[in-house]
Length: 320
Image (cartoon, rainbow, N blue to C red; front, side):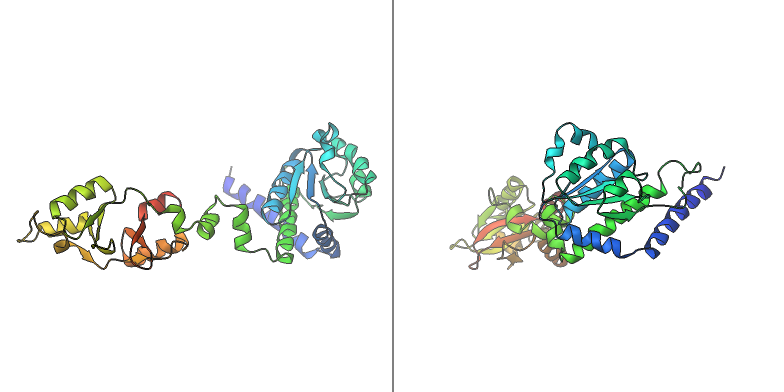
C-alpha cells in the first residue's frame, strides 16, 4: 500500500475543495463580515461533534485577533448556558447537514431574542438554514475520506472559511502586530514587542569594585557575582571599566601578570553601556550580539550603574 500516494490524494482533494470555494465566493460572505463588525457584543460560535471542535478553534482565533468571541456547546446551552448569549451578540452555528439535534434545539431560543444568526451548512433548506439570517455555504463535492463519509474536506473548508472571516475582520479593524501581542503577552511576539530591559536587568548583588582594587580581589568578586564579570567604578561611583574572566585568562599569558597589580591594568576601559532601560529586550539582544559581548551594563546619563543584562538571561526568557 502506497501511503505517500494516499496522503497526496487526501491533500489534493482538500486543496481543490478550498480552491473551488474561493472561486465561488460571493457577496454573502461580505454580509457576514459586516454583520460581525456591527456587533456590539460578542461573537458566539456553536456546533456539535467535529463541527463543534472546528467552532472552538474558530472562536479562539476570533478572540485572539480582535473579535471578542467564545464557544458555546449546544448541550450546555440547553442546560443553562444559553444565558451566556446576550441581545447584542451574533451567533455562528455550524452543522454540515444543518440538522444536528442538539443544535436545532437551541435555534428557536436564539431567534426568540432576535439575535443575528450566521449558519454554516451545506443545506439552505435545513433547520439551521431556515433559522439563519446569513448562510455560509460549506458544501463539498467529496470528502477526502475514502468512504466519503467522515468529515474531512467539509471540516477543512469550514475551518478555512472561519480563518477567512477572521482575517477580513482583522483587516477591517486594522489589527496590528502590537494588538496581536497584547492578546499573547506570554508568546514570542508578545515578549519581542513588550518586554523591556527594565523587566529583565539584574539590579541587586552586582559585582562592583573600585578602580584601586587589586587583581586578586577582583577575581574573588568575579566568582562571587556569578556573571563572569566585575564592574569597575571611580571615586564618584561612575562606571569606567569592566573585567571579565576572559580578560583575566588573557592576562595570565602576559609575562608581567601579577595578582597584586591594579585591576585597571587588565580591564576593558570605557565598556559598552546602555542608558535607556525602556529599550525593548529584543533590541538589547541585537546590540549585545552586534558588539559580541555577554554583559550589557545599564547606567544613567552620568554613567552610574543601574543594573546589568546578561545574554543568558535574554535567552532563558525566550527573547529573540
